[in-house]
Figure 1 (spheres, rainbow over the protein chains, first blue to last red):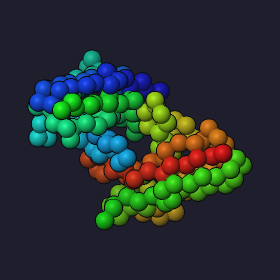
Figure 2 (cartoon, rainbow over the protein chains, first blue to last red):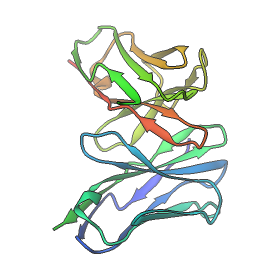
Figure 3 (cartoon, each protein chain N blue to C red):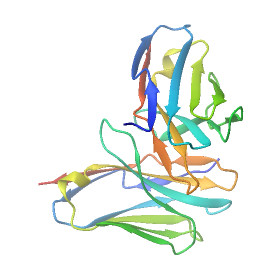
Figure 4 (cartoon, one colour):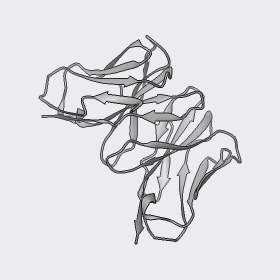
Amino acid sequence: ILNVEQSPQSLHVQEGDSTNFTCSFPSSNFYALHWYRWETAKSPEALFVMTLNGDEKKKGRISATLNTKEGYSYLYIKGSQPEDSATYLCASRNRDDKIIFGKGTRLHILP
Amino acid sequence: DADVTQTPRNRITKTGKRIMLECSQTKGHDRMYWYRQDPGLGLRLIYYSFDVKDINKGEISDGYSVSRQAQAKFSLSLESAIPNQTALYFCATCNSYNEQFFGPGTRLTVL
């Protein structure tokens, strides 16, 4: 069983500040790392899928990096806005197509 | 129009009752998944399917069964519901880029 850990569990950030958080996963049998954005009362929405060591993906003010050798991924948000408030989930998929989710980082943007 | 739909959206039932949760998708994806979400825990995989009549156990399949009789539908059954199956249940599909698309969720309460 894969163990996916996310930190911090919760984070408060002032509007306009930049922030980042971490997802760590076992690097053996790794296939892909997923990031999702999950707003309250809605469904998780896919942000990024990364597979190769050194991958970097960007969507607007949000970007992510992947290190498969050491088993971690960072999600960065530049210039936080109120609409960024959500839970950010990461999930690791292995070569047997098993997917394990982390517990998420709950981001609160303070006005 | 929602691409992944779940019915019912909310259900309250009693211990010992049989419950079926339905998931339908119009995305044409072969891969479909059922997850449950509990407070303080991440999404946990119950069952998944790669194609019609293909069934695979996930992390927490005990007490559940699934059926995949058509590409567009993946149903989850609780043969005899128990209180610790009270949770938020999500269905998801997956495309060829390994992006998952989640349904709106079904909130199930077992009394």
